[in-house]
Image 1 (tube, rainbow, N blue to C red):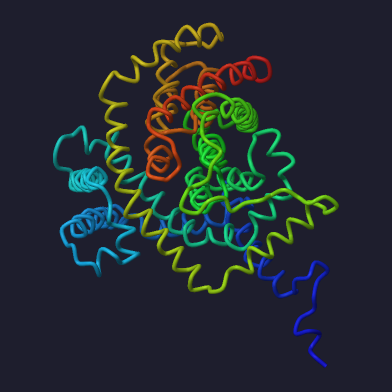
Image 2 (cartoon, rainbow, N blue to C red):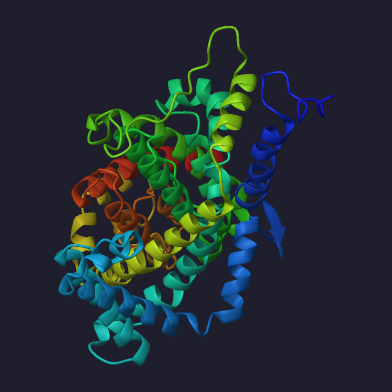
Length: 458
């Protein structure tokens, strides 16, 4: 007698082993990315504990290490351009990392030069200042380095073993009518909410390039669901002195985020994005549930099928390692270059002040005290999410600081991190469109934040 046909068959025709292949990696992924954990009074996730632990252990070495990595990204790209040996140019790993256009090589070189100047304290003060280059190299890049390291290595647990397929089938009935999105987009939002907005964007880009989001869906999810984590929200609240109202503060952020996520995808430029898929792979998703089958059962069936496609742990690990190298060599040099430039414009030029003038009458109309002082905080967030809090920290009115803090977390699109990640990705969004979406989110959420602040909390 066969050993129960080798494995006991479950009701839907797959084996218990196949079910475990879906469940075990997915549960580990949920525990790492989506389950909140309180550590020393701060809410984080398992991934955050790993990232913070590594950063704490090697923090003093990270700026030098990443400066070397930045130069490797430049030298590698230059060598690939100069050497035409087919063995090198056709090497899939090397060509993917280093075979790039001249424009991107220039940006990588600019990032490496900025990092060197900041690390060594040489060159114009405007570049290596504690308000510009030092913010990027010593504050931002270490966080990105460790978060992207662990996120890239462990993200296959969310993507490749069926969890997205299961969640997509179960919550599609909510996400589709409300946000015009597939159900799996809820996982992006949760990953951002519990961990990091950049992790959410990384998840979105990989889903788009895998054929699971259309151009429109990817653009919508990346610009509306890559919300700031609870941990970072608490940092903002403390910095501007309203942490004693954190529950009211984060509730306002959540309401504003939902309102913006409903409205912004329905107006240009997001509404004009095509509902077509990334051409090299085409459409790879179908969340529709057949008649007579429960969403839960269908979700499990689809998840098991997806997990069964994973044939080798080595392939999963190699893709994770490649993602780490791609982020470190391809994205972080751009963060150093464009992030520094954005902060220079914000801190040493009046451009954002000029752009903020139209917000003064709007803030006055909404009865927000110190409107003229608060106006720059409405626009400077496009450079970096933390800058509105810096501008708002000196404002006397607690109501105004409350609204500035809310806006810094609901605008979402900022160039020092999220914006660069999107421009670098295959998602069809350009700089002008990102700025328009930033303004739309600001205009949509500002009245909501002001109304809630006036009626409920002040």
